[in-house]
Image (tube, rainbow over all chains, first blue to last red; front, side):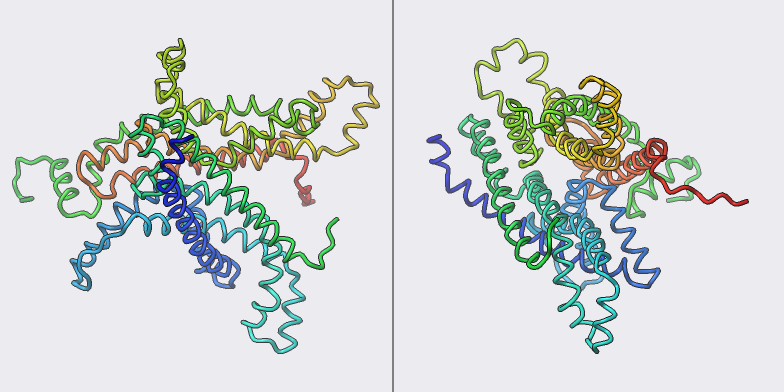
Length: 229
Length: 256
């Protein structure tokens, strides 16, 4: 226990990196999810195909594989392209960027399904009513679709977020100095890996519990005026 | 280069693949046997742990669903613990962490089991998947239609018979779609194996890249392998669902 206290700053900075990574990938995944959902719902066979391919790819490939492909392979490709076109010099993709990009990409596909289902749950008549009131497409999205979409999407969104937080642990494998990396390094150097890994586990459980409370608050806020059976 | 006539076609192909193609196909083809062994390891650990975890999860789910006065609390903490933390950390905890304790290293289990990456992975994976499975099985048990249970009681079934013949079969049917997700999720999670020195599909990909100093060939090949596995598994589940959930499908219209 004293050891953990001694290394508290290492663990805390690691936790900060993990949270940064989680929130960064969440933002990216929400953007990708909104794009993906509108592509799937659009009356356009090409965009539907692309979005379907995206979700199938992500369902088929583990996140760590994509992450490594992006971190090692992506750098090579970006630099080969830069060499060939002469547009940019040597670019280095750092671990945080690779982590955010790959986790965001993976969960963007799950968010696509979440948002698609949520939008489909909104009665078509409400959007037609908006059109007949002369609302612009953006106004319809902002005033009719979004508030109800959030409500329908929240349970599945919560689930995605909890899985996402746990997926961030994998970024330590490509060398990001996050919570897991810091703790396993510290644990190895003082020869008490169990103590440190257990601390990591508890920190993850705390993160999960906090987000559970926060998301439940959000759920209440967006369900004002909804009768629960 | 290509006109040297003493060169075989295969050598020519290897040359083109290495120097002129963005992806070295021949090198991957040369090591395809390693990838197949990796697939075997991935499938082995995934399915054995799914089997153990599945068997383990049934009593846990029953105890949770019927709120057993003694076991409900501990099982809740068990599932919360395993579902709330990353599998990677759990595997590290068992594989790297347990060696910290002298009594573990001196116990009779250390040499044959706890010092081996394969066994540590299997144990952690089984406990992990049983926590997830128990949680959705509990939901499925709680959703058993009241009438089915009442009918069983009316027929004079004992509690065990009722469970065995009424509740569990209909629970498994309802849980099947969720279970296909869990199987694919476990397959995805099995990449953690490559972080504890095991040569699963991703492990082989990493080995190939490290050995020949490549940037992406090994990962792309691993990606293709995983996609094929997921495709086959979800196809299998769809056939299975068609069979076991046949009574729930809308009746097809008979064309006269």
